[in-house]
Amino acid sequence: MPRVVVHVMPKPEILDPQGKAVAAALPRLGFEGISSVRQGKRFELEVEGEVTDEVLASLREAATTLLSNPVIEDVIALEVEDPATEGQA
Amino acid sequence: MPRVVVHVMPKPEILDPQGKAVAAALPRLGFEGISSVRQGKRFELEVEGEVTDEVLASLREAATTLLSNPVIEDVIALEVEDPATEGQA
Image (cartoon, rainbow over all chains, first blue to last red):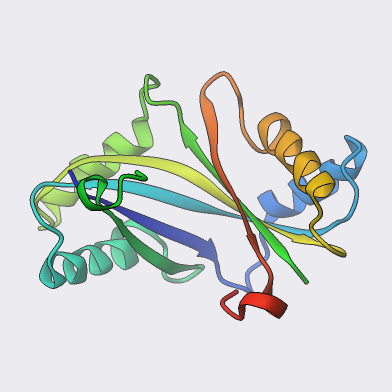
């Protein structure tokens, strides 16, 4: 069954408190050399049937309206993974 | 500045209420043909200096201990994106 992976990140101009918290915690726990962290979301959607251009356009709309908050987040990528053809998913 | 992207997903055997909620909302909003949704996290870490094997090993440890909860989540991938060499970040 093909899978579409949707990547959502906070917009660059939006403060990201979760990412800031992680960035502050890293040196405390001994991990140095990280200047900034931003935290976003990753969705894996299992699609019934083929991922046509039409399906992908519909998923892109779903990603921008339902999976992300367009006021503060960007959908930065939609990836199609087909286990049948790629063997990597 | 190179960037390391960490992908975290709930373990397959763990119930994912956020993903279930999204999967239930999609058909209500007119998006059909999605059989399952799982929601995970995506972290973008800006690394100072070069991403050596040593840095990557340290980041992998940080990913499994700090960025994810190993009881319920898996770090499924660490990707290195170097804007200088790849031009895609």
